[in-house]
Amino acid sequence: AQSVTQLGSHVSVSEGALVLLRCNYSSSVPPYLFWYVQYPNQGLQLLLKYTTGATLVKGINGFEAEFKKSETSFHLTKPSAHMSDAAEYFCAVSHQGAQKLVFGQGTRLTINP
Amino acid sequence: DTAVSQTPKYLVTQMGNDKSIKCEQNLGHDTMYWYKQDSKKFLKIMFSYNNKELIINETVPNRFSPKSPDKAHLNLHINSLELGDSAVYFCASSQDLSFFNEQFFGPGTRLTVL
Image 1: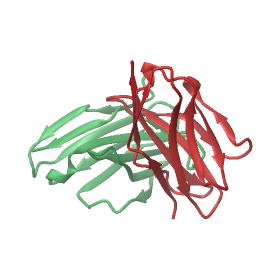
Image 2: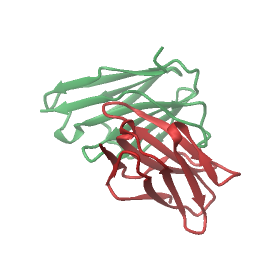
Image 3: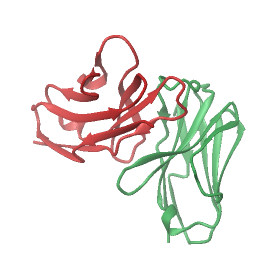
Image 4: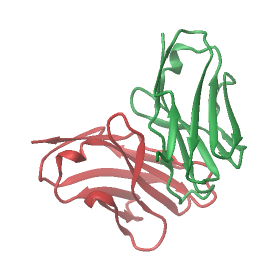
């Protein structure tokens, strides 16, 4: 069975600082990996995804993530945080032939002025 | 135009009542889902439908009955509501069952059972 662990339920950074949200996955087959963002009182929207090919994936709003198979990780980064980045971030995993997307428990990102 | 819409946005009701949540997508997608997000923000799939056919029923109590009249709609009916049903329910859709496709989420329905 696949699973996702997001390290840190709450991350707080200063505006302009580096954002790093950690995600580790467990999968016995090549994974598909996703980061979704949930702004307050809204549904989730896709930030970026990794399926195959280049392991460094760029997404919307300046975010990127790197698939590291040896570390079973897919950490999300952004060089410079903006106040509008404050939201809940979810890492998720699936695979070819999967019947569902498995989400991590989420990380709440707070941006300090 | 909203891609995935849900009604109502808020639902407050008494224990034991029956309620429905409606979901519509105008993206032309084949696959639709219901997710439950609990108070700790944990998101778990409940059901998935592909072209009106049930694909996943993730050990959800029989009190929950999804209905898909056509592939653009997936409604959720809940009988005999319990306190533990209080949560935010999200509808989502994707192009098909390929799980490398993006899922598009509705705005959510916050259900409060008193």
